Amino acid sequence: MSAFPQNHWYVAAWSHEVGRSLLARTICNEPVVFYRTAAGEPVALADRCVHRRYPLSLGKLVEDEVECGYHGFKFDCAGACTFVPGQDRIPRTARVPRYSLVERHSWIWIWIGDQEPDLSAVPDAHWLDDPAWGAVRDLTYSPFRHSLLMDNLMDLSHETYLHAGLIGTPEIARTPFTTTVDEENHLVRFSRHMSAVECPPFYAKSTGFKSPIDRWQDVYFEPPSFWVNNVRVAPHGVEPGPNGDDSGAAHVKILHGLTPETEHSTWDFWAVVRDFALDDDSVGDFLLAMNQDVVQQDLDALTVLEQVVATEPPGTQELSVAIDAGGLAARDMMRRLLS
Image 1 (cartoon, rainbow, N blue to C red):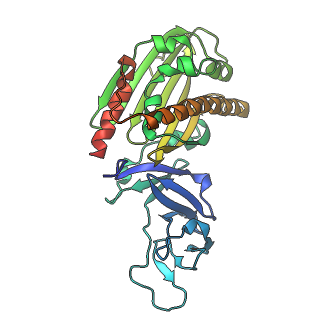
Image 2 (tube, rainbow, N blue to C red):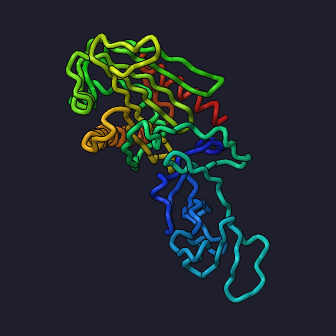
C-alpha cells in the first residue's frame, strides 16, 4: 500500500516555477519532471528514462520534447518515445508515464493515482489571483513527515508559545474551540473566536488596529493536502452588519498546500491573502516577511520533532488532550483515505 492517499490532487508547483526549462520535483515518492510547451501548457512526466533510468530532468528540452542527457532518447508531451539512437524502430514499450495536471489560481496541481482524474475535486484557492484580494506566497521545503505539519496546523494553540511576539498571544491557548467533521465534503473544521484580546504584531502592523481586538480563526482542512485559516480581526465590538457588510474588519486567509515529497519530507506551498491595503505593497512585504518568520519557527521545531519521532521504537505512545481534537479528526480522515 502507498504511504500516501492515492487518486487525489496535490500542489506540485507555483505557476511561475514551471517554464521552458526542466524542473525536477519528487511528489509522494514519485520523481517527476515539469516543463511548459511552447504554447504554455504545463507538462509532467516521470523523471526516469526507460532505457537506463537516467533522470530526464538532467537532459534538455528540444522544442516540446525532452531529450535524455545520457543516450539521447526523446519523449513527447504524452510520454511517448520519438527517437532511439542507432535504430529507426521505436519499441512499443518505449514510453514514460505522464501525469495529469490542472493549472488554477497560481498553483499547478498534480493527480497522483491510477484512476481517472476528478477535475471537480481540485480544491478552491481562487483568492490567490482574485483582484479583490492581495496575495504574498512562498514555498518551504520541510525535512519532516507530512503528518507533523498537518498536526501543527490543526492545533493553533501552539501559536501562543512557539510564535509569541509574531502572531501568538496568550488568549489563543486559553480560548476553547469547536471541531466538526464534514463527511460529505471530506473536511475537518475548527473555529476559535476570541473577544477583546491582544492584537499581535502580525495584525497590528498590517491593519493598524490597536488592542483590544476581536479575532476569529475559522480553519478547514481538506485532506490530504489543502488547509485554509480564515481570519477575521476587528476592533473590539465591531460586528458584521445584518446585510453581510463587514467593512469594519480586516480579513486574512492563510493557505497551505501540503504535498509529501517522501515519508520524511514535505513541500509546503503557502500564501497569505488579505482584503485590505491592496494598493500598499509595503503591507504585502510585511506580511510575507512576518509569515516567513512564523514558518521558520515551525520548520525549526518540526525538524527537531522529526528526529525525535524517527528514533523512537515502534508503538511509542503519545498523550492527546482536548486541543488535539482537530488533529485527531484529520488523522482519522487520512487513515480512511489510505484504506
